[in-house]
Every structure is written in C-alpha cells, then in structure tokens.
Image (tube, rainbow, N blue to C red):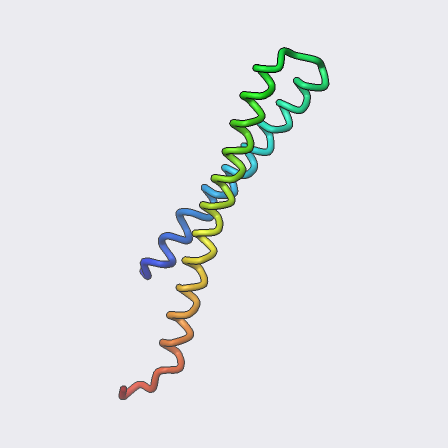
Length: 84
C-alpha cells in the first residue's frame, strides 16, 4: 500500500475527532461562562478546547496533503507509458 494513502487513512479520522472534541469542550466552556462560573474555570476549558480545534485542523490538513500526494502518484502512474 502507498505510504501517502496510509498516512491519510490514519490522520484524517484523528483530525476530525480532535476538531469535534475541541468544539465540544469549547461549547462546555461557553456554557460555563453563561452560567457565571469562575473565570479561571471556563477560561482554561475554553483555551483547551481551542487548542484541540486548531490541532485537529492541522492534523486534518496534513491528511488532506497526503491524500493529494497519493492522488498525484496515482495520476502519474496512469499517464506513464507501460514501456517507460
């Protein structure tokens, strides 16, 4: 199996999970702020949520890059003449 495909297959679900988990944590922090919880509690939780969202975007972006490289190698293999 192609190395790019394996990386994409591994990173894409992890990135999506991090994004979802980060948004969930951020939503919890927003709820805590609206219920007037102490500043430090919702601030730390919200910061952690945003870190997770940004990490997920970075991981998913790397997965998209690997998928594009995989598609390029497939395209190059199909356009290469058989006797080259």
